[in-house]
Length: 633
Image (tube, rainbow, N blue to C red; front, side, top):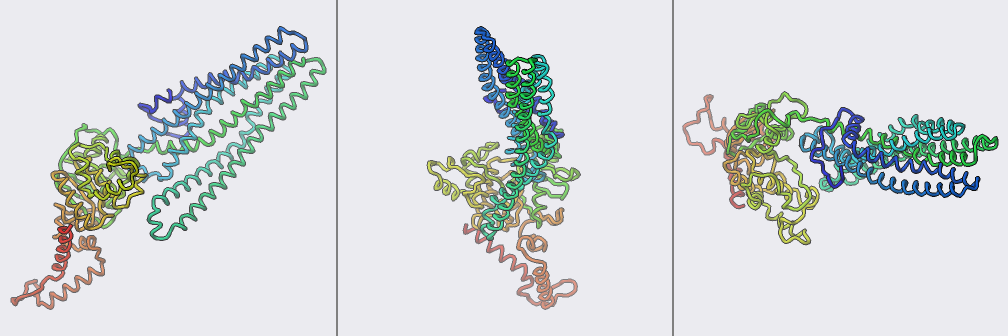
């Protein structure tokens, strides 16, 4: 796999049962790249290991005054130098390729899982954790994959050098063969503590990242309530905790590095001390002593890769564990489905609450609990709940959405969340979404009343004459809440799904704009199934059918004006009437009825009455005022 071949056409199905299994799966999928890196690493390290033999051979040639052997040693040193340069260059190239391809594979897997889970992902994993996994954790996983082949080459080189020294000079070679494994394994007792400290640092960094993302997302609200300093203090405290954890972690790794420097030095001193004694006794030559000394000195370089692989594994293991936890999440609703992929049509029905949205009609849903309304909207879109699979699936035309293939279900029903997200890019790219083609961008923008948004984009653009080419910043932060909401609504209208579910689509706009949007949605979605979760009288008055959902079941069905007069619970949600105000209203009505002389059967007296139902007339007056606002708009 080459970098220019990225992204993968299919990143594969990961083994997400645990972090180590996930790392092993990554290694198996990059076996070719690992073998290439191993081959170049062996060339590099063996060329380095060959230098002591040639240097010792050259020293002995000088002692013996042999010019031919000295020339041969020089030629071998030149070959080793070429091998070192070529091996190092290609090792670095192949290792970085392994790093990038591993990181790209993990990122593709995470992106695919995010697309499969949708909004359920952030309900099961914190948003800051998802960001940390897709950025820092991916880098650490790639680091381990990249270091693995270099470590394998270094380990094989150390083994071969030890065997070669034993064969070349048994007296000193045995000392080196015993000392090298001790050097390699000396830091193992410190690794568990270093791993724990790395985990603590990663946990604190994840919390700080989550706090920072939440603060940035709510900065506008924080400024409104004067909470900037409070959250700044919290983030400063979290960042200091990360710093202290990083310092403690660095101290442990500095100790490991010191041991990796100290022990080879002690081994080198022991070899020189013992070798000098052997040379005095005449048991070894000066060239052999120089060879063993040089070999031990140069072996400190491959031994550094033992420290690196330990560090890489200690950092990548928790990262792989977190990545595997995200990748192991599964949809309650299977992605493939059990029915054919044809998009159904007909009434949209939720068996759990009894909510029915007739085909081709605009249905408004009033729910006093915003969280319950959000869950119901997700169910209508076929997004199964996270905590249970016992809630029956919503039906479109009698077909359960959870039995349809995922792409078919998403084509059939589109749900716009209460807080939709705008991605960075041009307006043209924002509106370039899978759609039926029946609704043009201009019509959707007009229905969503985005004229002022287009003007604001042109004014903020430096080199865009067409508002469609104007860039939108991340999450649309340069726009107001109402402008972002209207652009998101336009994006949803362009898709033109069989059924469109909108959760509070006009909560951030003024009443005049809201009245025009209500009319635009009704006209643009004529003949298509539309469900709007709202408590706005302007939207409710445009609906063909209004449904009141109370305590997770349908409590009343009708049109807005009828329900406003006949259903106290509906009136309480729409007009924000409290229970005390409702009781006071009922008491006043009862007193007026008694004052008017109504009998026990509820029959009015024969004399004329001027005001039998003042409460209802008051409500109608309110509706007339709202109607005047709409007509004026």
